[in-house]
Image (cartoon, rainbow, N blue to C red; front, side, top):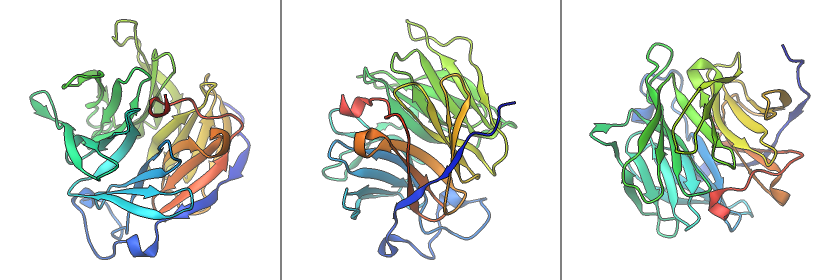
Length: 305
């Protein structure tokens, strides 16, 4: 067992304005979930080259843009359940939508179009999060309602320029967030219902070998969700249901606990801010984006290459 790491509390960076909080409307995504209908459910934080923070709202099919000055804009509002969001270096945006599959967003017009709506001849179970490799390949997870009772979630790779995605791993009990090392040889996947981070080694020819549990976690009302990586290979993990973002070393040692000053719904995280050293955290219960400083900058992303 490791000793408890030092702990800090994040600050509130911004939150969904009251005018954009939807009241009294339900969503198919909420079926089977206890509690009151939320006004929003933030996910998918990602920065564009102009310093705007982009966010998804799963329950009401919205894509938000938050300017550096803190102004919120609804860029897209459509019939979907957007979750993960990642910028391509050409400016367009990949969105993992649990209802409609892998989508492509034009950030200038707000147009949402299919990118990969199906996995060859079968539908997805409910895609969740995505990240670009530095060569333009897109990795994404297909979570659906999988768990330890049905470990059939998948991790896919869509090669740059391809029209169909290939499954890399097909036995995951709830694959969620994912990050890729700079050399593209190691993919880390947050496996929510296993309460763990899996390590997926990728060979030179693109195959997968020796998948294993890298970090075993505990507690929380859900499990690990979105992730981000810094330049040293340390991993920031949003622990949904615990109101926490953990930072682990590249060896899996806990380095820091960042606590939420609001709710327990810490769902995702990305780097941004001065020197790219701030962690921006979506706290979905309150509709807030939290912020905390880290000692190392985030790893370069394909969006800014």
